[in-house]
Each structure stands twice: as structure tokens, then as C-alpha cells.
Image 1: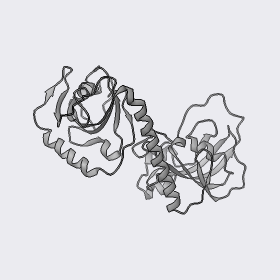
Image 2: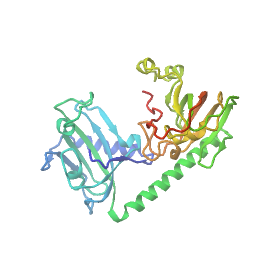
Image 3: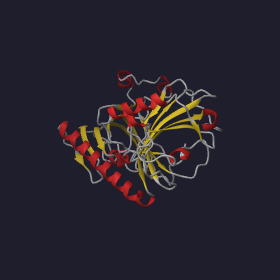
Image 4: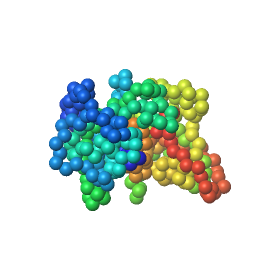
Length: 326
């Protein structure tokens, strides 16, 4: 895929529009295909935009990817993660630049790429059969000229942050919470006050945790009982002691910012709920299928122990809480 593909937030509430569009693409999927110079098979659907994308333009694309068994591998309409592409001169069969350059805003296409070419030199995922092709159903949502890219991205970021803040404020109000709020935007509520020492930067903390989104979906927990209740229990994780309290150095950027700040405020033995915006979590990129861009995170944490350190090490291998619970 094009190396410029990154995840962005999409607005919700257009499932019916997507469904109609998808049915249109499916109805055209078995009709005749053209072929690019590099060997891409393609069919353009509903072309008609007056201005086509140019090299250097910023293009927002929604995408459905299906394997040869007709299983959906990715659907950016449903996970609200459209792709953003800086259009480049076509380099290989493994990017969409040849196709994008044929399309304009609101144009659509079906593209078939041989798996062996797409994954050349890399392992093929188990859900994809060697020797087959992947089918991509795509629609160009926006085409932004080079000289307007920065303004577009700034406005998009501003709108996403406003939407995120409104969601967090609503959650706090709806649940009648009375959090302590710090200057960074961290909100925390202590449910059980511990009496032990507070950690300082460089100490190792021992923590139990459950992470969830504003909609209540749990994306990770080291509680074996809760994992079983939510049918996310993983025996391999248990064998690797992944349901034991986790240990990590605090205050040295080893974990997401919200944890680094919050746990330094808590005494050993404290139980608390942490609510913080994406700038203290996984930011505008997100972290997984569940944790999308600009995701507010909620963590129920227990500071089990504080192991005193010898100061902040000069270097620290990067680590983050596993958002997928694996």
C-alpha cells in the first residue's frame, strides 16, 4: 500500500448511504475490467468529477477490502477510518496511485490486485490465500489541492478535538461524575484512597487495570474474571502471565501520557478511574480497531505496589499498554 496511508476520523451516521453505495459496487463487480500498465485490474464506477486528482494532492478515500472467499478484511465506512493519501507518481502494483490519478472527488472504483504481487517479499496473512487476488472497493471522498492541505488538516484536527471534548463532557455530565481535572485535561476520581507512598519518576509501579471507551466497550483488561465475562479471555495471554498486575517504570515516557501523569498522583493502594482525551492517549492515529483516532479513554486502575527506583534512567525502551489485550 502507499506509504502515505494513515488513519483519520470520520463522521458517523451515514450507514444507509454506505449500504447503497456498497450494493452499487457489488452489482458492478463482475462486469468487465480494464488493466493499467503495471497490471492492476480496475473498473471505475460513477466517474464524472470535473477535476481529477493530481500528483501532490491530498485525497481522502473510503475503502472496503475483500479476499477471494468474499470475506471483508477492512471496511473504513464502518470503522470510521478513511484513508488519507498524498498522491504520488505510480511506483508499483502495490499502490493505488495509478487508480487515484484517474479519479476525482466522489468518484469510485473497484481494483483487483494479485496477492503474490501485493505481499511480494513479505509473509501473507493466514486469511488471505496465496495465488488469489484481493478486491478493493474504494470511493474518493475529498480531493484537496497541495496549497490547501495544511488548512484542511488544521480544520479537521480542530473539529475532531471539539467533538472529542464534547463527548467527554457529556459522559461526565450523564454519569454525574465529579472528577479532579488537571491542566493537561486528565480527569480522575479516587474510589479508594491508598495510604502507601506515591511513586516518583523512575520508580516501578505495579498496576491492575481495565480500559474502556466512552461507549462502554472494554478494549483491554488484566482482570481474568472480567476477560472471561466479556468473552475476551486469551489462554495464551494467561500462560504468559498477562493477567497478573503489570510492572512498568513511571514518569519516563514508557507508557501513554495519561498513565504517566495520573499514577504519579496516586498513593500505593489507591483505586481510581482515569478519564483523559486522546492527546494523553493514542492521539490522532489511534492504536487498534477499537481505539480509533481522537479516542477518549477511561481506565479503572489500582496501584498495587510501588517499587522504589534509583532515579530516571538515561534511556528507556519504549512500551505501551497493549490496546488489543494480547
